[in-house]
Amino acid sequence: MKVLLLQSKPFLPVVDGGNEASRALTKELLELNYEMEILTFSSEKHPFQRKEFEGKEWTKLTINNIPINLQTNVSGALSAMLKGNSYNLSRFTHSDWIKKIQDMETNFDLVIIDSLYAGQEIELIKRKFSKAKSVFRTHNVESHLWRIQADNETSFLRKKYLEILANQLEKREKKILHQVDLILSISEIDRNMFHNWGMKNIHLLPYFPDISDSIPESISPDFFFIGSMNWQPNILAHDDLVNSILPKLFELNKEMKMRFAGGHQDQLNKSDSSKIEYHGFIDDKVKFMKESGIILAPIKTGSGVRIKLLEAIALGVPCVTTPKGAEGIEIKHGEGIFIAQNDEEFVHFATQLHQNEDLRREMGKKAQENLRKWKTQYNLKDIFEQNL
Image 1 (cartoon, one colour):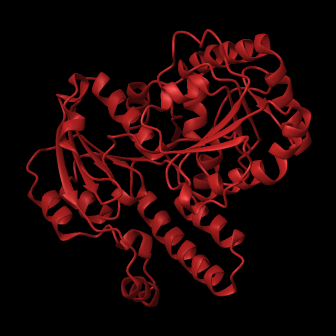
Image 2 (image 1 turned 90 degrees about the horizontal axis):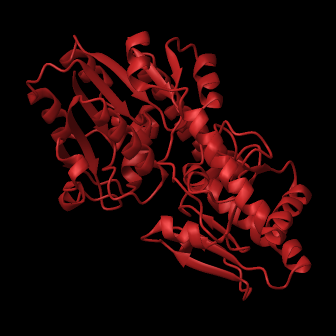
Image 3 (image 1 turned 90 degrees about the vertical axis):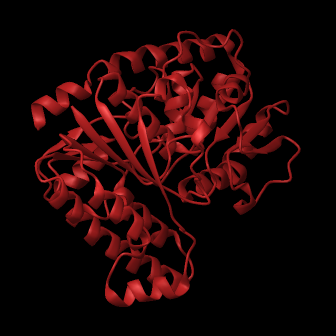
């Protein structure tokens, strides 16, 4: 099987959830022994670093990289808006990318578009590789994320502009998705949204991190949150923790500590409490999560799944989250994670874990076991054979 994998950014180094989801997909495709070629964009935010792909597991890959400038351009944004085009997607229209696709001579059996922004040239892809089946791997519903930003915006003018962006993006998102042979949705919630849009061949393929064979010998009673702070749901989660949840927890126990990790923390309204630490981007996220205790994730908006939450669960880290944070994670409340319906429950479950190390270890172990059971339900090769 010859596969062309189109990605909007290099999956290495892993600096955010999108990178990690793409890394996991690429690894799974390689394990099926497919002959793979990757075409990816790169940018200042996500530069292409050849040395990152020199590891043994990636030696079979052929990777082509197209540098692109994704910095916001006011004139470009206005031009796209006036033409009724999605500015979010139009930034991914690039002559070098188009030429690279046009010049490809390989007769691919399968073209996989990994995220919406790699599918801007879907019409060209369908013409060029007319005999290949096309698969779209969604990380979330992109236009829905922008609609959430518009709903949360307080400035009238900015709110209206974000609503226009969301509408234009949704129009193009629907058009792209309608042209592929198979959609691999990362969560059941997203799959239902695509179904309501009239999409037909949609299959659920959750993201699964590498699951650790053990849990930490001793789990700290402290708390942490990890995630990039240029994503609105993470910013709102930080604010909810700092302004509502943590003050109640600190009242119960003066020894508690909270750590925030993740890039772009300059965008936060940081707390000046001595009990709260800001670590910025963490090079070794596995080490950080294993040593930092209990993950608190009061996520209340967003789409897709919380990648960092799943990674923590796979390491045996105990977790407290919300129904929105648990979306796309097929682990029931009390069977490895605590799912709080409100701030009072959130504080209650966090306190229970803080006070009881046996409970922390029990929850971490249960989460890993249930994650393994859930993973056995999905086989990418079977999905392709049954749906294409």
